[in-house]
Each structure stands twice: as structure tokens, then as C-alpha cells.
Length: 118
Image (cartoon, rainbow, N blue to C red; front, side, top):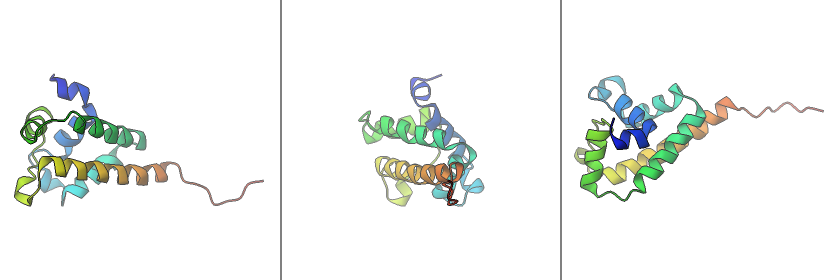
């Protein structure tokens, strides 16, 4: 197994499993793929994915290195270039989207009761 996959297993699961070669057949768009990833797991896993993505971005890879890591190491078939975005820009968007859905998932798993207890 390669070093990137070992260091970021949840990112490999997200990008390789939800942005594989047929991801556009399975999901209507990128947002739907990320939402499905989050809601297929638990909130803790979703938050750990956000942390892993933060750590991955903190590696300071060049755009070319990021593209290689995403496509080769993490098995991601999404290419942001046709949408006029860089990989860095897209990964920051993925990070924010993951965080949004993780918070939503956490709220569903730990609902705050509106019933007053004595």
C-alpha cells in the first residue's frame, strides 16, 4: 500500500470509493457524492475525514503533486480543470462540504431533546 493511502485512509475511501471512474453515473454531482459518503458512515468518521483533509492540504504539495496524489495515490477520477478550478480550490471546497455534512450528521445522531426534564 502506498504512503498517502496509509496516512489518509478515509480520504482514500472518499475519493477512491465515491469519486471512482463511474462516480457521475452514481451521483448527480460532487455535492451528492460527498453527502453520500458522510451519511454512509457515522459523524465521528466524517469529522476525522475533515481532519485528514486538513492534514493532507497542510502537506504543502504543489498543484501538480496534488493532482498526482489525488489521481494515483487516492484513486480519485474527478478532474476539477474542466470546471475551471484547481485541485487546491476543489479540495478546499470538499473540506468545507465535508464539514457541513458532518455537522448535519452529528445533529441527527445526537438530537437535542426539546422535552424539558425535571
